Image (cartoon, rainbow, N blue to C red; front, side, top):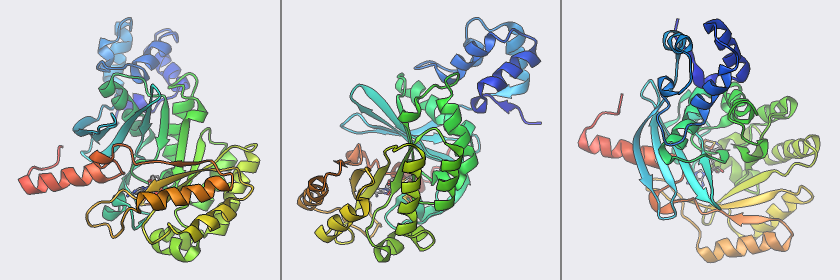
Length: 356
Ligand code: SAH
Ligand code: SF4
């Protein structure tokens, strides 16, 4: 039997573990701190002070702690740090640490690759390799904290992958992250971004998943969205926005974030901006405009800064809170999938095999 993964355990499971090891339930708190909270130190449980020998030997025999190796990093001028993490099977995912206002935000990957196939996204090019487990997502957070030596304050599920294609593990992760007796993130500081999988969004509503919702809209007509986001052929814009409206209503007017990648000549015209205002009418959503982060081989261009400002001005004029989000660390190619692709190309060029 493979050992139980400590990273994926909630408080009740840690209590049960203490019971099985024959030690006081009070040790569950220390164990939790050792798993989730150590910054800038190694998370070897055996180095945790005050854990009884009995518990340590039980842990050694029956459990394991995932600690992904960091196989590549890059740091941007703005302090953004991108890490490539290798999971136990050697599969690599990106995670990004983004400083701002004294607080650290971490962008988490939920899958190795992605099956959605958006034509502007580098992660889409290799398709889906596999889902990540909740324990692996927790391990991304603890690796981020260990490597930065700081506590992460905000989590955004906006890295590689479509979170709602991996619903069960992502939901488990969100619950672990927001468990007051676990990692204790405020549900308002955890944001899940989806390309718009309507049935899974409805499940999110039913399950009252404790996090914010972000939706990648990226176009104002079905004709354009069909071509850049194939998922639109299944769940077109009207159906998607009806689901967003339902989420807002059921969650008591909770604000939803709408993401809109600006692609030169494709979806960035003034007519698009006006249509976006119409689509957003009465929804109270915040809009994040993401000027396309170009990468060789992707058949799109970033719009000129003037076009981005003109687009934003139309939304602001209509009373929509609109933020232009430069892909943080643009100088280090921080859009998702880029570090992984670059490292793969370098390894190919120098015939280095991927880290095991
Ligand atoms: N799969 C989820 C979350 C990961 S993608 C989703 O699509 O929402 C996170 C965000 O990055 C999405 O809004 C996506 O549209 C955007 N994105 C992807 N590639 C990009 C690029 N090259 N430049 C700018 N934004 C990009
Ligand atoms: Fe997948 Fe999101 Fe990239 Fe689309 S934008 S391919 S859903 S990761």
